[in-house]
View 1 (cartoon, each protein chain N blue to C red):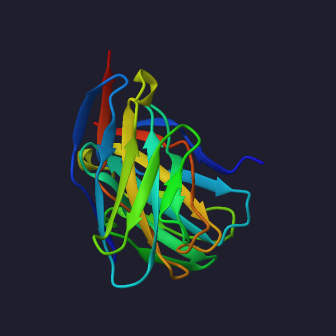
View 2 (view 1 turned 135 degrees about the horizontal axis):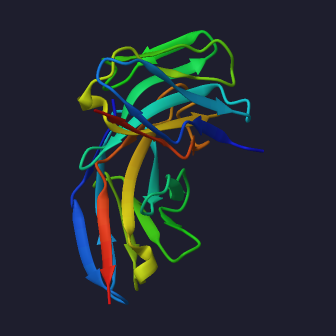
Length: 114
Length: 114
């Protein structure tokens, strides 16, 4: 049982490049979400999904796209990378989001945009 | 909507001293409360959570937190810290509603020195 798997672990991008951060979970969780972690800012919600085909914006969605075609996968796309997107990105999943079930986090992707 | 305020960004303490990391939350609905820990260069780990029942919850490594509904607080305490407790600690809140996100505070860096 792998839990939440994020790939890649590290990535360096040039300004303007695009890329996709992958997130997969094998726990049949309906709820998945993406956070970015920046020093002194905690974890801020980028996008989330309550089930396949359903996504919504979080606190800091600009510059990111998501889709949820399957229950297992929730990729995060950077359309045109900017230095301000340098951050550590975490994917999390939960049986339904909210409530007492808790959230399982991936190990993170450290992204640097130069 | 929910919000979390961690009142101290950094807490330096000496080994074997007691420590308290303060967390206040705001919500118009009932909530569940969590503390996560992040050791240097690692992902997030759930330390403890309050769901219902006894307002005092404990972790396996000696931390405890007390839910105070009237003061909307969930402070984390340990009577005697170790060097190995050096980490960043995040307080988080989740509404008692399906499909809602886990909202984090900005984190408190606990630095334990000898």
